[in-house]
Length: 200
Picture 1 (cartoon, rainbow, N blue to C red):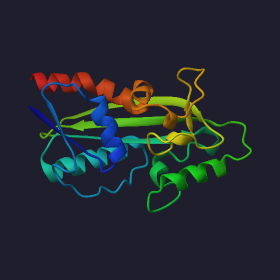
Picture 2: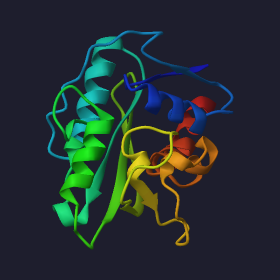
Picture 3: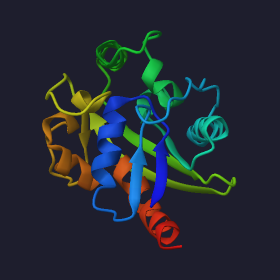
Picture 4: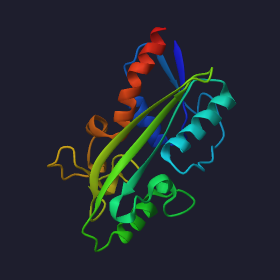
């Protein structure tokens, strides 16, 4: 059995990752409830830097194989903000509703509302070997929040896959979101790596 610790304290991310990596025989996913680890300060200037900080810090502390990721929202009209500051866009403590309110306020009156979600997933094995995969979901920011599913910016993000989509991610089921999400793309690319590790 290949044991893999999910390097996140975010319940929404844990739920999505469990859903996306389900049905992988020989894989046992561990979370903070199974092996505690401290908060990792995200001081990187890019998504991959933050993902590496998390995966290395947690792997060093636990001695386990760890899967961590960093993801965020880049808005064209805001020069790529909130970017790596997505979770703390409106300051501390993390508050998704305040983040969404601030984003809509900053975009008020702007015609270009194009945006994209980016995810960088990093797998580090107990011996230090590292694998990196990425995913991107293009779309635009809605005029107001809609939907109750998901977390983070889901209520204000309308994906452009398919091009005719009019719902926010928060109006989609977990299965619907899972088929297109940036996190799904990164984890789908990580899946064959995990399958090889399980087989070996």
